[in-house]
Image 1 (tube, rainbow, N blue to C red):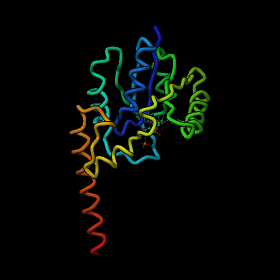
Image 2: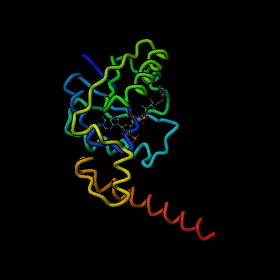
Image 3: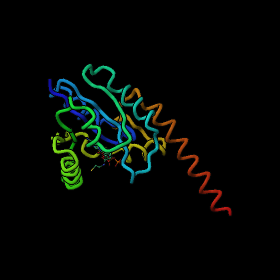
Image 4: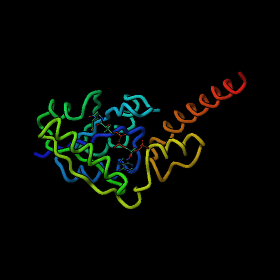
Amino acid sequence: MKTAIYPGSFDPVTNGHLDIIKRAATMFDKLIVVVLINPFKNYSFTIPERVKLLSTVTENIRNVEIDSYDGLLADYFKDRPEIDVIVKGLRATSDFEYEFQMAHTNKDLNPRAETVFIPASATTTFISSSMVKQVAMFGGDLSNYVPAEIHGEISAKLTAEFAEKKRLADIKRNQ
Ligand code: COA
């Protein structure tokens, strides 16, 4: 039985992530999608919210498990000896340097932690969570970027975040 782990921030999950999840789920017996923290990022969604969105969009893929962890990926890997490999998506050459560095760091921290890369499908190479968030904040059409069943939750969260940002900017301007 081969088990892979697909780590990421998923803030929020997009059609690009789902493309990788669906394809990886056909390559491995089990795929664990784990929400992790990049301490240099500002997140819009809480970890439970990101887990819930991921659970909703993967509920029909029987061999996918969703989890979260607030430590190093290499340590999560150590805690779960049944995991064989880390899966990451590559959208463009611009992703490569960062992903290469992460793959080497993870292997350095845990020599068992090998990474395999799956090229993103051509239709999703331009999608990113930040781009989705920006479109949602301005009330744009999300249909090509995130699964329909989570449009409502994403739009509600981000339009509220944007309204709050505008309110704080107005207060600052009027001081
Ligand atoms: N299609 C579309 N978009 C994709 C994608 C795909 N296949 N794969 C990644 N992306 C996008 C994401 O949406 C995200 O967009 P954003 O920058 O606009 O938010 C971007 O690519 C980066 O995604 P991700 O791979 O999730 O990187 P990250 O920097 O957000 O998170 C972690 C990386 C969380 C996996 C990493 O920081 C980590 O492992 N953290 C735990 C601590 C640790 O072990 N650190 C040391 C690792 S070296």
